[in-house]
Image (tube, rainbow, N blue to C red; front, side, top):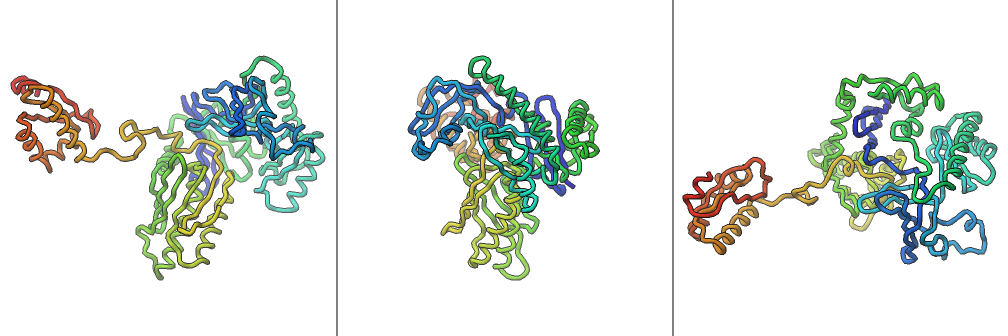
Length: 496
């Protein structure tokens, strides 16, 4: 069963896509961090950088947006045969201080601002309208050639002059009447955008795409979805009204879930999301993959783990790699990992097996809506691939950097903490005339001292001629050391 499960909360809305009882995608929209991809802005160029062939545009967000030269080239430039587009400079396209209408095509990510384009597109239920590009495209997920040709013929007849359209996957089998309704709706939006862009000063918002809930219904609620479940009565009714308008045959599949219960917890989605945050992912055979996400790239290591096979080592390795290839494609989609990805499959000595594993990975990635490219296998046996970055990773949405390890993923060892205690004793002895000191330590470190290193405190007292007292403090982090009292021994004893 394929489901869309929507959890409406006070501060954030979450959408889970479940296929055959497996979580495949998660979308999260927070009140203070709403998605901006698809929004159209009237912005002002603040800086032109010929060396980068790009410009920064103020569109009213926290960080200036980034405009590449190829995203700034106008329709007139494209049709001018006297212009060599390969040699065109960004300074010939936009000027500093110029007001410009742009659309966000990539979310702000980390320290980077949003990426924008002047090539505006307006998505509808069945079509995407491209007002400034004369082009017809058909979703690659529609595979039947006769259906693709039928849709192209319809598009030729209904598209406005000098404009382009892309036929969406949901349009398979749809008749011409529904396309015409979609075109009329999109042209109304375009007319509103054209009016808005002539009003007011930059930066300002001209058009906002639908919110997460309604965008999900528009883009993903198709005949392939068995049910859409939502836990908010008001949003449920809003979805029903929208479905009646765009796909009335799907109305009976919209279900309301009693909001007195935790919908994600009750339907098992929360536990699946928690698993998607783990570095290690176990395979059904007993093997596992380890996913390490860094700013530069994501590395994935494949291991046989508990899987010992039943024939020979070659067969065990091949089966583990095939299972891992399938799981890796699921995890990339679920975690929304983009950019450069390096996969370290278990070494295979058979070139035929290597090609079968790569073919399996390609076939599984074809199920993903986000474009991926497999570049091949290196001499070290590593698979290089890329996946388009379209939104923030799941981990960046749900996790934040640990204030203690600062993103290292590791903490100071007990021996380092003990060394730091010794440094503090040295400093106290050098700069004071104290005869005693009282430390507070994490209970874990204190237990380690008592169980393994009692002689450590005794040795410090003997070497530095200072009495050392320690006690636990549950509020302290593992590597924290707190000096509570320094002075004469009688004074320090009173503090214990």
